[in-house]
Amino acid sequence: MKKTLCLLLAALLLAPALTACGETETETDASAADTAAQTETEETEPRLLDDLPDGIDLDGWNVNVLSGAHPEVCGDEICVEELNGDVINDAVYNRNLAVENRLNIKLTDNVLRAGGGEFSHPDYAASETLTTLVTSGDTTYNLYTSNSYTTAALGYNHILHNLREVENLDLTKPYWAQYINETATVNGQQYLCTGPMSLGFFRFNTAMVFNKRLFLDNSIEYPYQTVLDGKWTLDTVNSIAEQIYADSNGDGVLEVGVDTVGYSTRAYPDSGNIDGFWGSCNLRTISKDEDGFYKYDVNVDHFVSVVDGLLMLLNGDGSEGMAANDSVFQSAFRDGKQGLMNITLNWLESGWAREMDDEYGVLPNPKLNEDQDNYYTLAQDQFLVYAIPLSVGLEELPNLGIFLEAFAAESYATVKPAYYEIALTAKYVNDQDSAAMLDIITNNVYVDPAILYLTIMNFNVMTLRDILGSGQNTAASRIASMQKQFQTNLDKINEAYGKEK
Image (cartoon, rainbow, N blue to C red; front, side):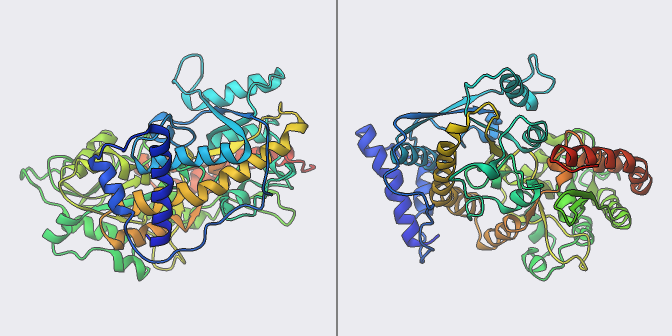
């Protein structure tokens, strides 16, 4: 973390606390760690600002957000109540304060995700509510944010405004996630956007962690250089898992939480822990044709090879691919009885990580083999995206464009470094090699359209879970049986975007 940026962040975080609260903060272990992390040195790039003119005054206008955020992992991303000394909380608070003061607006977050109730699934609570409001002409909310896959469905169902037609919104800027722009834009239409304004932009990136002590005990080098050499593959992970495994009770049966296991996960059916392999092994299903519409693009031979490699890993001599539930293998890793584990990066913020006695390192998920050109990261579909309800009047769109630009740019300048460079890479990991791995992970993210449009597509990460859970490589037959319906669903999406039959 570089000195100029850190001094700026320290000033931003301290000044409002002293002026608004009239007293200094109580020092805690967490805030002390944050402060220490802010004292790293070196120069940094200049603060990136948007191209909005000076002196904008929106006369107290209320940005009223309907939010479907997961409170347990996204509750601190949009609004927080007060400064509390936590580096992430305070960056979000100060970002909002800066944008509200700059534009003379009020930002209100209305969280709708208590779970269950009248809704078919809690993930759909906000999207079903917004659909009802828009179709009835209700204009209570002028901005919407929720998980990516239910929001994408709102776009092709004509519940949202086309962001490409919103005045003052420049989605080419670096503070917008360009991989989302590319995936979500069809025929000049884009209905959702995201970037560092959503911490899930980082938190839901998939990765791996390893127990450093178990590597040292088994004379295994930390795999950082292996990653840099392009040799971090499924075979490599399997080999390491076999070296770490020890039958602790001597009964000849590998048991997670009892024996020292090299690698374990839950591959089926209700766990997303293996979803990251969809990205890391470069499984893709949809590309775009010459007119920019989606087209079916599945390499069957590649899918078969990936499933072969994953079944080898999940059923290896040092691995367990069907742990009873997620908490079983997470507990085993926390307690120092497991060498490797799949995660999303928000795990680094969790109690599971903080309760560990052993040190851990962070790695990208492995490639299929050394022939693969790069490491790829799957962004799980729960990261927040932003959209504008179709019920919002055209006269209000320019103001929303101004807000989104200012909000995204300020997030890039303050919230991103507070989370990624201070909290994530200097607080939640304890070595520079892991920090370098985080750069590889976050710089190589992609979202397959089949995952973005999960609500309508029939071939996505759930299919991979089903195949792996069966224990048999049925990828070829599964793809053949699903191709016709896949194409039908793809045609429906393209038609919604204006493609003629």
